[in-house]
Image (tube, rainbow, N blue to C red; front, side, top):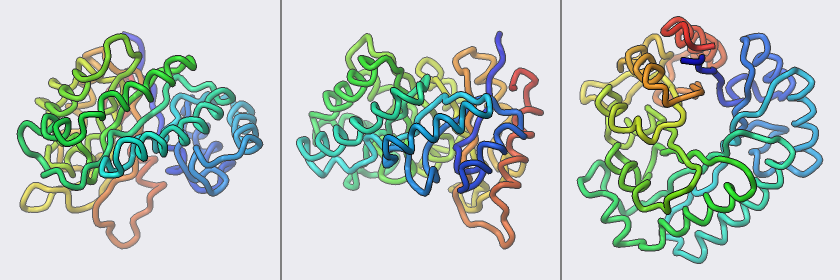
Amino acid sequence: MSRVRLTMLNSMAGSDLAVALDRHVQEGLEICDLKDGIFGKRLEELSHEQVRSLADEIAARGLKTYCLSTSLGDHDLALGRERWRQVNSEILDRVLSAAEILKPALIRAIVAKDTFLPQGGEDNMNRVLARYPWVAAAYDEIIGRINAAGFDVVLENEAHDCIITSPEDVCDLFATLKPGHRVSYTWDVQNMWQMGTPPSRDVLDKLLPLLGMLHLKGGRAGSDGTLNDASSLADASWPVADIVRAAIESGRIEVICINPSHGTRAAGFDGWAVARDDLGFIRAADQRVA
């Protein structure tokens, strides 16, 4: 199979845009995943002129934009249908304007929050849909607008109050969407762990039919198995290399994106040093990673 490309969220390489992009080049990365720390702002907060400057800085280094990691959808469903749709429609307007200039392969949307939802419960998505029957239509609208503008969508799970707590939830959510969308799923391994489902090969196998990307960050479990300490991927207490190799072997993913680890950070924890170690660890885990 063809190689799998490696990247990281842009701000992991530093809050100064020029420094961060130079570090992408120094680490042999070819693509960018743009989120925040861009001229001190999130991607969707940038002015038209700032997006132009960002595109110029990326192009000047021979890099390409792969994903716009937006905050689309990252809002509590308790806002209600109309307010939730309005907030996200306004964000999407700005995102699509930026995408016209940056030309990403993917635009990320976050799966919504529900502060009333028990974590890790069975039949999770049916409870969500019973409480908020408009959810599927709202995501159909977001995905449809992005696809119509010429971009693919990737949905991602978050770490707190997310309506996705397990692979079954992911499958149930995708089953509610209209067929024909160009949409895949990013498994943020640590985020789902924080929502009650520890990383395992079994989880990966259940997600593979929908998978488009992996978001990897380390983390060590406490005595109860929940995430406790931030760590590099090499020091993580879950089977990182095994999951990475299986995901690549499946042929379902084209990109692995490194993320900053959650959890308690030890004194002297150096985020950039950990990021560099994580890039090296993933490359060493499988020679098909570039």
